[in-house]
Figure 1 (cartoon, rainbow, N blue to C red):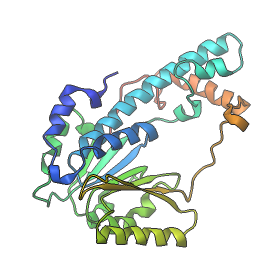
Figure 2: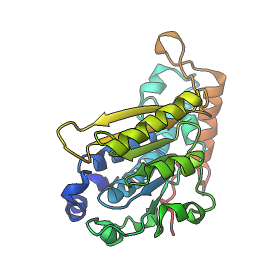
Figure 3: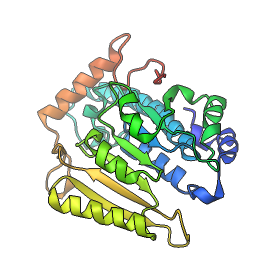
Figure 4: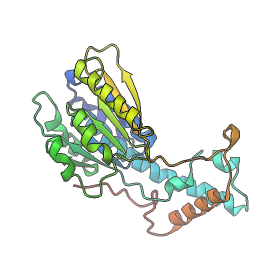
Length: 292
């Protein structure tokens, strides 16, 4: 599997998008790691630049990883069930370890929508699409050249709910007021850049805190500070929780429960992968990236 994020070609191309005053040299890799951790399908970026290729490459790499993980999961399930064995710890810990079959019952076809009006002269946003084409990542990205206030109606019709939004623009208040309902209520994330250590940003943090108090169960908030920087020095992560589905795979002590439902999911997944021409989330076909 090609790890686009870790190639010399990727780092060389992305270096040309780095702008010292934007402060995203650590945030780009962090966002990529978040994607690999969370596996979101619908990602929105407000404010293109250095972070855009990281988001796109992480989605492409994760799509590859999900597909290969599914094939390996089916192989170990097939071998285990062929022996007449029940699912147990030996199945759980075989490669790929700990993976839930239910995660692979639907296709994983991630995509990124990037919004920018290209109005900031010092930004590298205008060079992003060239870099994406150079890295063969443009198929995962739909660019919306518009002001944020005009962007909602220009999103693809089937795009919401948004699983992860990265907002690197001054319009964070507008985004919160007008896009929050588009965020996936089942744990969707909004990551905002640079709200700490200056008056307007801290006012928005107080606004969000008051919203949180008035809407119990609606969201969780964490602020992370790069304390060595004088500006562009924080991210604020909002997690929407109003529709979080209960997920409990284990019993007391964390031991996985090998229920009939788990076995049925494993058998369903095995059938999906084994079926010729399957479009399962992790079937064996070629990747089908999102196109404009």
